Length: 68
Image (tube, rainbow, N blue to C red; front, side, top):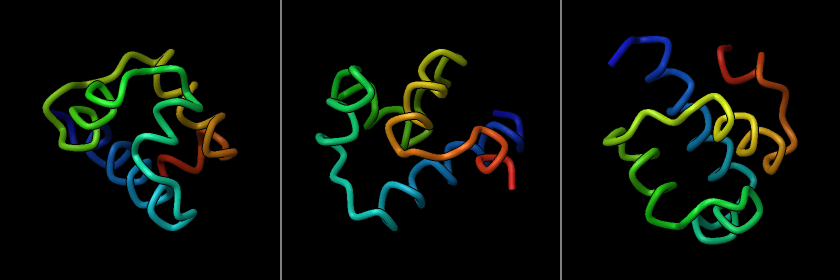
């Protein structure tokens, strides 16, 4: 996995935790399955850009913030 991809996935997880949103709640907000989000956060699956956009919108963050 590319370092940039790992950074994005780490930032998604950190943001979810900081906002005190459960994995199940975020999955529902982003309209993806709980298991898919679990695999994304555990870095077993690389999400499509569409899924990253859905997650960013659900977390109310800008995509650029995921790279910071």
